Image (cartoon, rainbow, N blue to C red; front, side, top):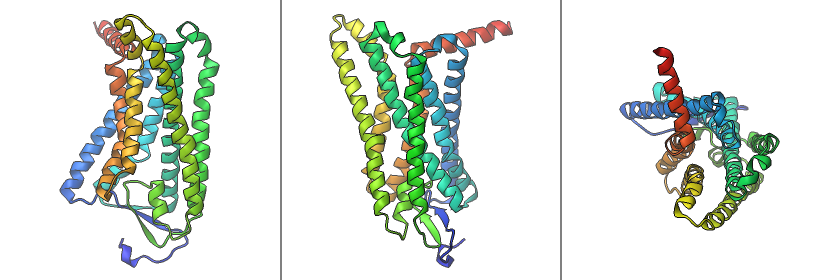
Length: 311
């Protein structure tokens, strides 16, 4: 379908730019994205299954981790399958309804990621600063009150931004300069006045990005202050190491997000967008598996049990 032959339509069709590649390069991207997607699915599914079947992992920390792994699977599933389809078939065209749905889900899941990481920071703060009262403070009810609003507020915010985007007008076959229907990419190609949408994005960025990041920072300031009070070096390291996995994920999430907005070219933006969508979901199971003693012991117990049953 040729962009030059497009006309003004009541329901526009979107052309996903993806990556400007040759057929061989497209095949390389397809294989790479498929491998990333497989690692994300298998790694996060492993964590979800382990947390569900292992009674020792039925704690607030792993309840949040289970939510994060579930979210990561859903997040990448909104974008990577379509990117693989484009690389495989060369068909870059997406219908209006599909594009709006993809944008809604990507915004909702991206926002939820930020809120869940904040909830996990609060959990680590209580665990380190109030260890004797941890189980009392972080009850099932409190955990639910931290997780449910994260999902709900994200969906509300995504609904508002999607509604405003749906009110924009587009000319014919619209070229979206990203590998999926990303909010800012859609706003930039609209022929309508986008002032209200820009204001809404700025307000949303405050309560989705700035406020959660400040809460995370405040939590770790208190955690570090508490850790420094511990006299033994071994005690300090043991206490702080319980937060190391979460710190890694937070740094990667916010670091890749900030780098994305500092990109200077379209190719850079495409690569950084792909990294932003995939890095945390891919690193999450690796970081928690390699650096978390409870997870590694749970995996070992399951393997030992499987071998015993086989014998």
